[in-house]
Image (cartoon, rainbow, N blue to C red; front, top):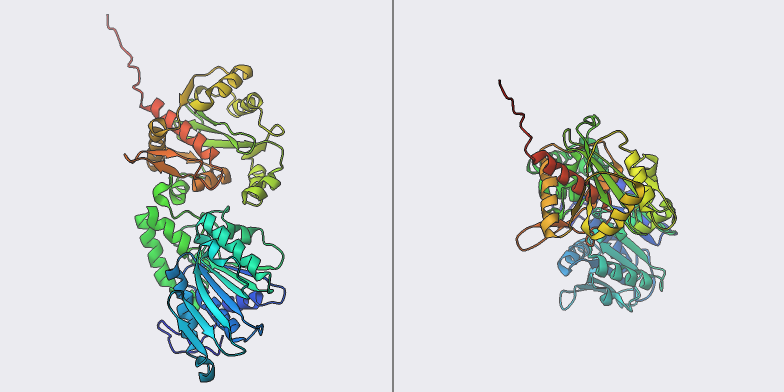
Length: 493
């Protein structure tokens, strides 16, 4: 790598000088026992340039002398794959002339670079994220560029096709990307649950830090002190601009520049992670004025959740429950969140009850014990499960007003809007909760032609049951608060 010249940018023409984190990745990726190397880092830190240099070395036979070598550069689109192709062709200009003369560049019908030396038949080709385009191949090296942002179905199909082809010739894969939007994405699972033969290097700061926190910016952008990518001053300036604008600007800054696992699809989110963080507080308001309980019943696989909201003070609490089988650790592995459920249980936010399903009546008794001595203003739940919940309420002997809400655009749109308004106006305050933070980070909405919102679990990447229960509770609390107070009439004699 140090023998090559930088092909573009302000340092074009100068010899490549690798930063320590780049050397660390190359050494780990090229170790004899490594079959797949994963690099997660903020945008603009030279990850494509590193893998392009490795691809060029594989093409001309620097560290692989197999006959008819094939290097695959896979990207979400052809134009994105061209970035690696341009880097390889740029680096090739600094090779000795006898090697340069043996390189053939093709731009149509497919982006390719062929090397005629060392027996000939060696090729680097760019493919888009369509799994069928990689079937039948036998690459010796593969680059999966921005793997965290490929479409879920086609992306997984392409990854499987490439990895199965690499096994034919003992090849290596390089998976490089900024963070995926959530823990359930395949790229996140490569990092959180590495398989044997993989090398993982992740530059991701701890969650829930301010966007302009200097130390965490350096964690996500280790190239900044070495003149690679954006400078730290620029990053801090962009962070302050993103904080001021909020919304999608802030979410995308956290996703791409801070390398955090947040959704960039802010138009479909109930509230953004930063908007939810504004609702968290270490000093909770008191339990005063009566409580509204939101109920979201789950099945055997999903979570059952309850939310407690005191409209007079804005206090919000939540609890979630899973069946005992499978265990929380096994369930977390299946859902792609590793030990998150176990951590929620240790924090007192998640419980287990029953065997394969949660017994609703027994669970409701546990829910009511959480607010023993409080005045229950209302229980509110999904009208679709009204029969099941109503029977459980009767068996548990609970006496409280019950409000049924639909999950369509009519009731759901009103509930989502009331919740968002209460959150934005500072009338929702909750203790820092991994359960709620995870639920709202994954809570996405569907819009109709009139721009009405409703929560949709079908599109949500994770468990949003606690968020759904919170929306029901807060919305009903807002309706109760909006009711006119009875006036006291005085009669003078």
